[in-house]
Amino acid sequence: MNINTAKSVLQNTFGYADFRHQQSNIINELINGADVFTLMPTGGGKSLCYQIPAIVLQGVGIVVSPLIALMKDQVDALKLQGVKAEFLNSSQNYEEQRRVEQLIVSGNIDLVYVAPERLLSDYFLSLLDQAPIALFAFDEAHCVSQWGHDFRPEYQQLSIISSRYPNTPKIALTATADLKTREEIVQVLNLANAKIFVHSFDRANIQYRISEHKNSKEQLLRFINSEHQNDAGIVYCLSRKSVETTAQWLCEQGKTALPYHAGLATEIKDNNQQRFLRENGIIIVATIAFGMGIDKPDVRFVAHLNLPKSIEAYYQETGRAGRDGLPANTWLAYGMQDVIKLKQMASQSDGNEQFKFITQRKIDALLGYCEVSSCRRQVLLNYFGETLAEPCGNCDNCLTPPTTWDGTSAAQKALSTVYRTGQRFGVGHQIDVLTGKVTPKITSFKHDQLSTFNIGNELKAMQWQTVFRQLISMGFLAVEMDYGVLKLTEKARPLLKGECSIELKVQKYKNTKSAQNKKQSIENDLTTSELASFDKLKQQRALWAKERNVPAYVVFHDATLIDIARTAPKTLSQLLAVNGLGKTKLELYGDKIIALLS
Image (cartoon, rainbow, N blue to C red; front, side, top):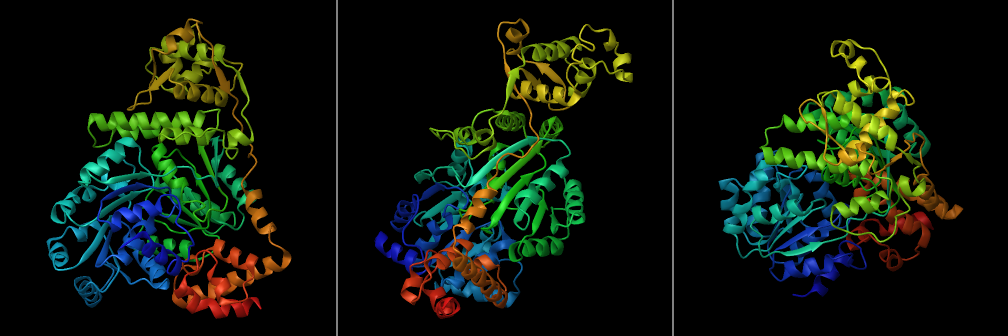
């Protein structure tokens, strides 16, 4: 069997003319029996890398996924493309589970989605021993790694699959993993001889934008109102309480915002997730409990009201925007309290000292990314070992280059205050000393008698917050994880002695130029008649989706409808040339689309 068979499936079943990125090489390796590890960004086409081999190879492809709540939508989308796919999980009754099990044993099915817990059960493994298996696909493979951002202990038991089925090809897939995480995935899953494919991390359609906390809810509302009035989006918060208060507040401002966190009842979470997937313009406000595996292509923005836990988490979460390749925005607001809270959470975790140390380094790396004055995309890609030769032109620092000032004197005052207070206090107390604020703590420790008391009254408290945060991000100060105490580092010595100088960034609060203009230009590129066709197609798609009880994007992506509106096909063969429209969908909807456009 060769790659031409796979390409025929790509074209006829999935409706795409050519493979993207490294899909062809990955699929070829699996077809020829090799193991594969692939790292490809969200929206890059990872699923096709195991779906197509599972279809062309004899036997069933077993897809291991932690996303029970999303399995049905994934399977519905495949069935609509003519693929024999099923899922097996606790949401099904006994008869339904038995039906799927019999399909597995008979081999009369292409793909079955299961959770790791079910796969590892003695009953299911004995079932697989009787079945023809085409391949195993470990989706969301970063869940294997304790250094990753979505660690699932049950994933570390999956090594048994390689031992039990050594001659069956296996593929581990993830969108986000640094080098250490990649190494652990390969080791834990026993994929030592796997072919490694690492695609570019660059999501050029996403704009990255970061600002300092200054009434972040109001900032968020301005961001949504000015750029994403009727768009679907995700807002991430650090705590369950802030999720609920933010969702309620957005509703009070006239938005349709739904909360999602692990503490909500299952039926509420499932209902909110389904509304987000099926309805237009829904905003989900969530902790990181939401999002992994979300296949909604038209999420136009992702906002963070607090720092994520790492650059990996930030990349994964922002990657849920713009999966359709159309322009999307990401926006993050953060402050010193975020840094301190994350470090406290790390110090109080159940991990060992090495885990806590690495966690702190990841927080430091994320803070450095937030405070950088250069192109954010270059810094982000560099973190994952990739180089971008030129600034991207699509981040806040490229669109509106930050203003800097000689911060040497201010930095020396800040560092000197930390030293003279005994390196035993947090940022708030240091700022009180610098600005001459008399508090019970100041007087009890006699810090109003220090030479640095009121030495920094030329700056306001919020400006000093920015100074301290940049000194931490640049490595002149360290934050103790337990209590947020500031300590001088070795790097601070030459700065205190006047042997070097530093430039600090002036913090801005206004929105930068946005990706929204680009988004609008996509529809503006359509003529009046094309835009009318696009609107008619969207309305009809909504009816078809309702008939099948699936999200609209399962029927057709917006990008597919835009192509149809632009090309105005008059025959079924012309319609089949549109990307994302395979033979099964052509049979279901082709004549109706032609009639609609005529």
